[in-house]
Structure formats: C-alpha cells, structure tokens
Amino acid sequence: MFLLIVEILNKGISGGEKRRLSIACEAVTEPRVLVLDEPTSGLDSCTALSVLELLHQLSSDGCTVVLSIHQPSSAMWALFSTCLLLSPDGCPVYAADASQMASYFDRLGYTCPHTASLADFFVDITAGSSSRELESLIEKWTQWQSSAVSTASESPTLWHLDPSGPQTKCRRFIPTTRVLLHRAYLNMLRNPLSLFVRLAQCPGMGLIWTIFVAPLHKDYNSIQTRMGLMIQYGPVAFNGMLQNIATFPAKRDLFELESSIHLYGATAFLTQYTAIELPLEIIAAGIFSLLFAYAAQLGPTATKLGVSFLSAVCTLNTGESLSMLACLVLGRNLSLAVNCTSALLSIFTMLGGTMSLSPPRVLQWFNHISPIKYAIDNLAYYCLTGLELQCTDSQRRADGSCPLQTGKQALKLYDLDTDQPEIGLVAGVVLMVGYRLLVWVVLMLQVRCRNGFGYQRWVKVRTRREN
Image: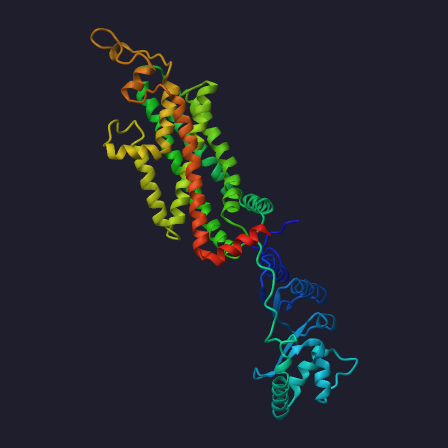
C-alpha cells in the first residue's frame, strides 16, 4: 500500500508516520554516522521500541547512531551500548558503556531499586540532586576518566567510537530505476491535471490547425498552405520545452539532493525520466500526426503518416532535451533558461526552409543541429512527392500552363528536393538521441563536480559500485 505523504488540501500521513519516514529516508542511505533528536517522541511504546530496534540493527551493521531520547523504557535501555548523562548545566556525569552505568553509580552510593527503571533512576540523580552533589558527581567522573586513560582505547567510551562502518553503497541500476519509475508513476497518477495537459497540449494545437486548413486542396495555391502547415512542426518543439519547464526543475532539485548522498546516479535518473516522458510524447505525437495526415489531408497514407509521426516525436523530444540542457547549465535561473531555449528554437524555425530560402552560410550550420529542419525536409519530400496540382483559369500563365504542376516542382522551388530522403529520417532520430545523451553527459559532470573529482573520491565511488 502506498500512502500520500502530504499535499496542500490533504493532511496525508500522521505525524508519527512522518517521523518514521524521515528516519527511514536517512537509514536507507546506509550512513556511517546517524544523528537523531528524540526519534521516539510522540510515538506509542510499541512503535518507539520498534524504531529503537531498527536503530540498534543499524549500529550492529557498523553505523554509529547518536541520539537523544526522552524517558526510555527498560526494553529500550537494553539496546543502548553507550550512554552520555549530562547535568542540567551540560556537564558530563557519565559517558561510557551503558551496561556498566548501574555498577558505577552503585560504587558512588546510588543504588537503583529493583522495581525502578534504570533510565528514570539516572535522570532523577541529575535532576533531583543539589548543586553540591552534582559538582561531586562531575568531579568523580572526571577523576575516574583520568584514571582510565590507559585503558580508554579498550573500552567503548563515547570519545573513542569505532570509526569503521559500511561505506555508502551505490545503488544498483536496475532495482534503483525500478523504484524511481514506480515513484514517478505514482506522482503522475496523483496529478491528473498535469497528465491531461501534457497529453492534450500537442494534439490541441494540431486540432486548431486542422480546423483552420482542412481539407487541403490540390490547386496551385495549396502549396503555400501545405508548407505553412509543415512549419507548424516548429511549435511542437516549443511544446516540448513547456512540458519540460513544468516538471523537470523540481525533479532536478530532488535528484541533486538524492545523488549527493549516493542514492542513485545520473543514468538511473535520466532513464526513469525518459521512460515516463517518452510514452506520453508518443501518444501526443500520434494524435497530432493523425490530425495532420488524415483530417487535414496532408498525407493520407500509411507511409506519410509514419513520417509525420516520427518527425513529431523527434521534434517534441528534442525540444524537451534542449530545455533540460538549459535548466542544467543555467542552474535555477528558470526565466533565463526559458528565454535561451525559446531564442534557439525560434532560430531553428526561421531557418527551417520555408521562411528563409537562402540564409547566410554561417546560419546554415544551425540546420545541422535543428530538429525542425529535418522534420520539415522529411514532411515536404514524402508529402509532396507524387502530388499532382491543378490550376484554375485565373491561376494559369498566358500560355495556358500551370506555374506548378507537381509537388516535385514545389520541392525544387523551396530547394527541398533530395535523392536520399532516408538520411533526413535517420538524422532526426540521431539528433533526438544525441541531445538526450548530451543531457546525460551534463548530469554526470554535475554529479562529479558536486561529489568531487579527487582520486580518493573516485576510488570510493568505484568500490561502492563494485559492491
């Protein structure tokens, strides 16, 4: 069973469950030292004992657990290995093995009755004694500690804790990714409005344009309408950017926190993010392509639908990857990331091949990294090849011929004709994968920068991964 922790209008889990959850979040990282402030406060005796038993198990595995506790029971007291008893002024009255605490105070004349709790008895000593008695207890402990210096290394005192412990193990990729996927899936189901917007944004834009242009005619003037419809694959990349801005920054911040304690790495994070995101993009791009191919009659065949669908997926995914790169490189300056991504996508759209037919050679290099350029090239070739155009009497030339008679002539007019159309399809897919791999590289570099580049750090991380 999976419970909602907290949200604005829902209390979520109880306070005791939140306390145990916070302990579990730290314990799951297998830390070398775990410091807790009254972990049992507010819990019933049975739950408090189970929490202490868990902490005792962690200490048995090599983790040093340091905690303050209020009114422990006799069953809890048996779990403590070392106890620090302080006076009201904060001076140590005892700081050594908990099992030897009763005999120590017994030698000082403070014998615990058999019917009393050891923890309550020791607290009463410090709380109920006079100032002179407390000073005597503090002085006797100081003298006892000085006389035990020679054997201090052999006794498990508070000041000579065993530093050995399990190094934080780097989570294995497959189990970690499975857990991350499940968490992301639950979060997605708990935000149905966000899920609906993500699925409806791209198809909604396609529906508007379909209503505006459908059905496409086959006359001379329809070429301009067809090219205008193809250029609308540019806003598809903007949709990817908007979808990323709505979800990625919060997930990035959570990843930075959890990766800093080696819960998982960049590969697991990006895998689960892509695995959740890609099916939604496929659904949205599929509906968008169906509207353009069949409802608008841009390319009502299986081949043309496939090209339209592949181009939409590549453009949508690449737009999201570019936005992810901007969010990672520019840090938490979200407005700057949006502006930079929008400017780059606007350049890609302007150089797509329909607005500027002969851009400067320097700007033409942008087309090699532009998903919009490849999408327009693919759509134009497959949707215009084989198209027969008709002309009305008012559109014919003086000699009675039509200015454009075939889609092939339109391709040459826009300089979009090619002998190897499959290269554009492959290039779009390669570009989509390449941008996502670039995101992975940036994530890996940022993790290395946060955790240090030193050789010792590298050796430790490598050892954790091997374990």
